[in-house]
Length: 157
Image (cartoon, rainbow, N blue to C red):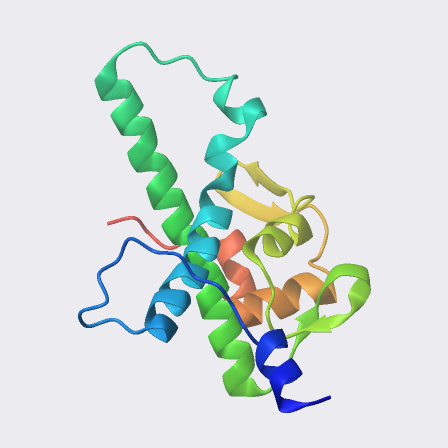
């Protein structure tokens, strides 16, 4: 392949209303590509099944729901960041989809992995209905959460 063809194949057309006085094309492109992650994270807010299922009449309730969703998304992303950082530092992986090892687990995979965990509470006694699986234990290690937290949650105050 000639150099001319390589240059054409490597061309990316970028249209922007950002003034060029300080930002070069590479910075604008990088910023643009980072927006995808934000859009992907907020896509659940645009999901018809979620939006149509909610009816909030008063503006303060809509505002409160927005704050709850933002905090939830922050926690969601924090879990992913913590797991990925810990796995990278330990140079290890956790079982992903189809038990394929991954060092970049998602918060969705984490919540899916713990979907059937039940904690039985009888008076002051708490115990797990079934022991945690090795996969669940691996995710807890990646989050630096001891298994006992299911049985003895940290005091709130």
